[in-house]
Image (cartoon, rainbow, N blue to C red; front, side, top):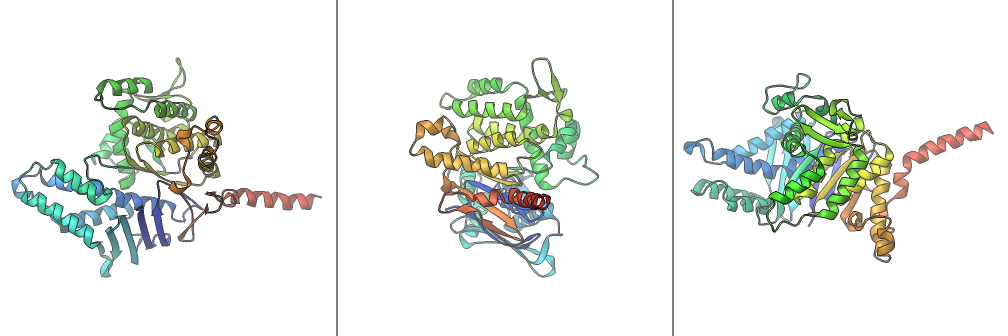
Length: 428
């Protein structure tokens, strides 16, 4: 069963009931709630990691303080909520519910006096209580795989140690391209602030992710792959075809090769020309860490839920098409899920091509494969495209044609064309 999000009376959102698919895309006017939906999904998805960190922290601060407590954990959830949104969006009647799977739900809503309540479905509460009981009663090492499996079972319904990673790539990410590494590290440890105010938690999380990943890319992508092969166990099966496609798409989008060094981040244009990232184009700065993070997921065969705001930012339409190709590729490997917000009709059109390729490819695989690589084909049943406006969400999927509705993609163009036609009529 797919995950499900419910929001009532929160910020620009009046009422949203949303089933979450493998590929989720939200389009609509600015300031209508696309980012609110994306951030809310990230908030709930990241609680799994917060629970593990909370348990691990309690195990490191001394024998007398090892007891874990559900009320204390709920307090941390409320603090995280305020770190994401502050109090400005909290109405007297706001309500959020996230269903991870059948019977496993977390609910946040407002109570009298501005209090934020954290509640659970009975199955969820029972499972969390059981984990806390085990941790408090057990003498096992806190990193025992039993706890990891228990947490993954609650949030992902899978009983193993391979957790699904949650990645949020926010709008405004290019700001980190202009900041020296020393300042970025100071921000991470709370020794420096940006514009005299602390970063939002989603940006902080993003900064932490890329800070860990940067040292990996102190060499070419080919060398990164070679190093992975050398260090990986014999049983690890590298996805060479997907990596080859990803490298080609990254080169087409970035128009160069990224490299991290002690002297800073640079993009090598050719064998003789390099540009510091802080002086690169805005499109390169915005796209860079989407590209590197996606490459890393494919390289490591990591299962992830990836949320990206405006992947098209500052990119030429052709590069937007290549970006959509890369996201389709990532969705099709390692059971990844994607959620994006966008203003771009090119993103929607490109995704439609992937859906259409899968349909036609069932009948004419070889011919379609020459146009669109099968690793980019997208099954219609895995996709949910929505239009966000006036506080609500509506599907723009065509159930008859099994495509994204063309009229929704072309609505802006139609408005412009109508205006042109009226001007032409006057000119006659």
